[in-house]
Image 1: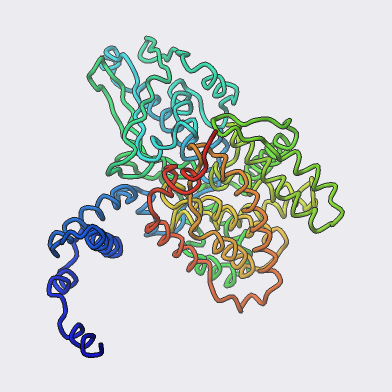
Image 2: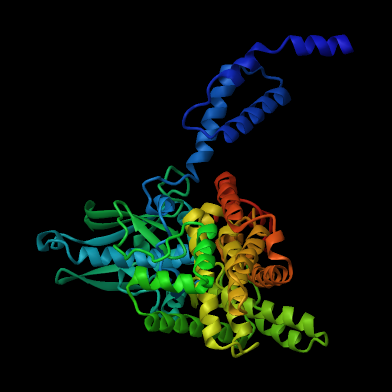
Length: 539
């Protein structure tokens, strides 16, 4: 036996050596190629069919490329290029009010079609005179799960001039109950009729610049008069082909990592919130009073969202899942809990369920950072504000600034998009923001704020986005409750440990999230092709 092993070791398979020694194809990820090679080889063994090294390499390369095409983003996108400079995001870009259930699948598409309509109004009169119709094509994740998210309704609303912050939820609900409605759109002195039939669910798979790609067209019969390709890149942010970011002021304290952000704070004896405020003033050009007024508007909206969700009668959410709402029941029973600490956990969970159920209804929510995670931050704002701990508004503003800084860094160095990074990019980032919010609002120093955010994000790494039937209900609603409670857990650990003893820093965890997002199978990136989406049987 020893001799046989020795002979095996000294007589390697030349085909195998050639396969490993050859250079990998330049456009294929090494890890993916090797995994696909192993699968091809295993299949050959199981079927008894011999596969040469060259055939194995070719097949593995083809499959690896196919897998890569479904998730890789174009390097020309600003959301990809942005990581090369300092954070330039502002509060008004980040905290957006709009209809649920998804910032990337409802708010983004509505902003896109609204933008396209505005562009069309500026076309030459002779071109407008030929116009007969609008057409919108949805690709990638927008096509895979758009029906469950109401993407077609949001896209139609944008074309007819409605904006996310002011659209009436009743209008979107009406499109669901009466899908055959048509609406006149003024363009170049004449009216074009538009309907849901003009929103086309196109290819879910292919080589797209971003997983959430869509094209908007102004038609003259079968001729395209004007066309533009757009991308809903997460958190309600949008880009288009040839996009150039708006000109902004230079940040007073430029940073691209948490280490740099903390460095500014510690060197200048400032809090994270104070650094964020100084940069907000410099980048946006707004005054401190204007910025505080905006934060107050956002936190008021968050409180109103939770209140609406708690007061809503128990009902069945729209869609094939037939999911019953429960925020009100959890809230009532948690209030009756005889154990005070247990009551607190139950109430935070109820607040998050309330916000997330409002999102699932398609009602107005705040992206913090996304629609799918829209129950997390409102729950914490509600819990420490007038409805709970009663912290002064100044403390809550500070918390919102630090939470935004954490969200900016995740957007800057990883992603906020479930279609790009799975649910770790939505609930995970929201939970990290929530932990930073709590630490800052309770006056803890920068290191504790960073540690709290790191802890909460770390324990969401690898979380998939697998909405059942494409609806932001299961597992999304309860995940908001867990995200809020884990944010509080992260804050409690960070505020009670010795800060300098934390082994993992925030920047490392964000890098891990980005790597995990890159290697995650596309089935778990808001496509409803894996996990719970295919395991749960709907009756």
